[in-house]
Image (cartoon, rainbow, N blue to C red; front, side, top):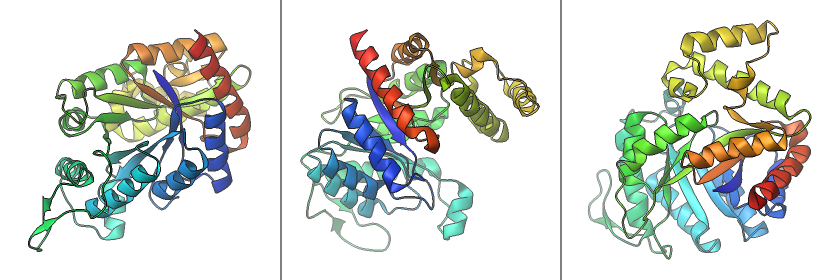
Length: 326
């Protein structure tokens, strides 16, 4: 299993570059870049990182299929793929419906939009023609293409989206807060719908995992992260699958959040399955749980605490070295 880092799209340029520098220095496989609404553009950050660190793989995710035209997105990704010699992957997802309305975009079926966008990226990046979109006539073919079809991932959680990912994508990107148990079940669903092809013979699983660090202070940061994600899950019940492995249902999660707000710690058995942090031995055991679940790439969410990023990067190097030597 590979170890990479995940950088938030609200980080300053200095922090983004610091994170990429740390990933390269630690010998990690790469960097995954978030692309959230009204924040820093992941494709632009990817271009800068690629020029700075030619050895790093770069993943973009999740890029919204709602607010980027698939042909324009493919052009951007093909350019990145060419400059990085095939080290870029794009993760597709859907932003909230509120954001769609804010931009004045038409309502469309999310699943159908993901299916169409993934198919267009695969076909166009391989140099093939696709029928004209909208009212136009004729076909569309990019004048400049990549050496091979772009790896397309889908940000997926629910069973329908996971099944779609298995049908149309090279892999899935699983959300922060996903436990190893939830990751195992999610990837099992997607892989059951995957058919090997000349483009990909394996369905890759990338899991974003909150990382508090190694040693003193790391558990407290991880507890803050776990409490925050429990709060998100309680507010959005459709995310309840992220509770798999915590031993909590939605009602119990709400009780834990209320107790945390009143000063009661989140149960340790919940904290330690929702991310990675604690002693080096605990961190290695947590990593192993994700490896056993079939995750191919754990992307450590290190940009979650801006003020502690330098120390957290040092802990990433410690963990990566210990993982490689285990």
